Length: 163
Image 1: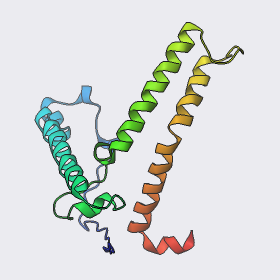
Image 2: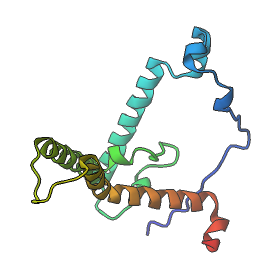
Image 3: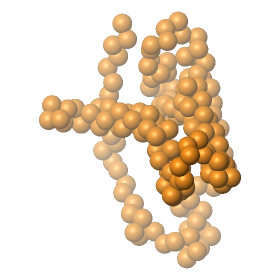
């Protein structure tokens, strides 16, 4: 039903810029900074465009009758690309991020107060907090790896048979 052929195309005319040849900002003239870095207006425009694109995708998704349709089916390739906007588009991801942050902050506060759920003393509170964070964010890392794998095979389909 939703068999849409996905293509990845790369521009054959590519300019490659090495950061090794870019001086640090403190050594640049004002003109070099203006030509190298985004201005505040450009950053605001990028942010506003991302916000508007996310809003349009969420709206189309909410209007859909099926909950099992991938988000990229809701926009044409000419309207926008949703890569990088997944967190802004997906309410479940937003909720997971909020919950993870909340739990980590709660653990951190309890560690500062010396209150733990176990009777044992925690030898390294920083390591304990790092493990809590790692456990809570595992799903996000798995989703990122899965997306990266799909992107890779979309760009290099000949490699899929080798893996």
